[in-house]
Length: 127
Image (cartoon, rainbow, N blue to C red; front, side, top):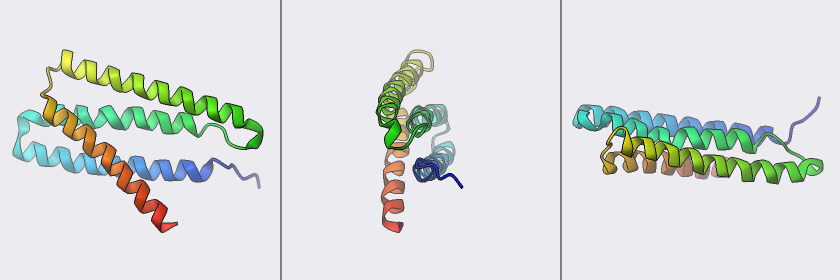
């Protein structure tokens, strides 16, 4: 049986993305109930973090192992650049096309980001 060294990282990344999705969904439902006019901005704010971060996680764990160390570093660097570009594109669309209010947009982005941090902290404490 061939063991892929990146499998553990992929599993942790998937759990972190799942935590982001759940916390963002809870936030969207709360906003939908309390301030329905901010729902689109909240959804777009959460997606502005989740989609680029998911792409980064996918891109970062394509390679593993000592023989592929150059590819690992290159993949990580490319993934980070693409993540930043996607985030900038999401914010540009949100502010220019949707005229999204900044507080719900940035708040949902922050909730998605912080939920991922908490998920990673919790997963590291469990292992």
